[in-house]
Image (cartoon, rainbow, N blue to C red; front, side, top):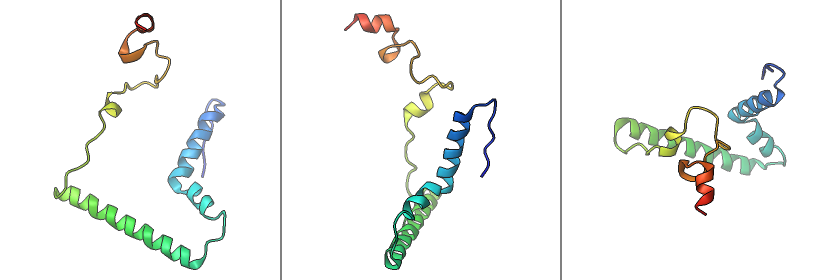
Length: 105
């Protein structure tokens, strides 16, 4: 696995590395290998994972065929502006300027 450090920004490169490792399942594997897993427990876990995957695939197929409705998307995820300003935008509650929300308390 390889991550490039741009403009000496190590924090960003570390975040990208963690995200890649999460997608690959490295953290899940490390947690699983922390202690010994008996063969019977391993078979049980793998069988449960296979059932979970099969159910998910069947649910996706049923949604594609229109047998069950697709889940509703959250409104707040689409309403967020494109920038990375989540906090400290200078606005108080409900989009009011900070002075106005402070004076109403």
